[in-house]
Image (cartoon, rainbow, N blue to C red; front, side, top):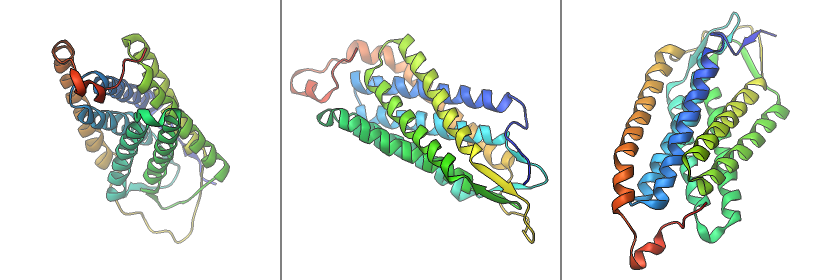
Length: 258
């Protein structure tokens, strides 16, 4: 069995990965809050899905993967599958948000949304792992894989609960911190499921190197996150002070939740 190093750059990659997960979660929670109190609800939910799914989950995963190494083996990434994993993360978060915010469904909507999102996050993680190609033989412990999926569902349900109930800045920051821990915990639990063996007659893997592929993708999504933060900051005060739903249109907005 070959030796796996999850921290080949020390604590740099897990810390930066957590910071990005926290940042994406915080931005996503603020976007969801805007969807309840301002105009363009669907637009803010899409922005929340990009922030949580793109930055909070996908970027966190692949920043952590920059610190992943297999002793004596080469690692490359399949570009289309890597991009597909990013799309999966954002789409499942959007679906989960839409389901959880259907008031008619009540608690069932929260559980259904959490289940869909959690399974989708797990699918994103293992799609990202499938995108990783190596000249070593990679396998997984099914029990730990199952545990990582349970963590993903619980974490996703908790995240959606926070989107429904958080309003104050302090509580939102605390919720984002918890979400960052949950996402990181799911990732590293899933990575513990991996075992690698030396394989004979394996060809050198094709694809892009980690730095070559992941760095521009991570930078691109991070820039989108910064732009969302700027847009949120610029529009938040103006919208909340000037837009007040009136008459029959007020029913289409979420009630204030403490």
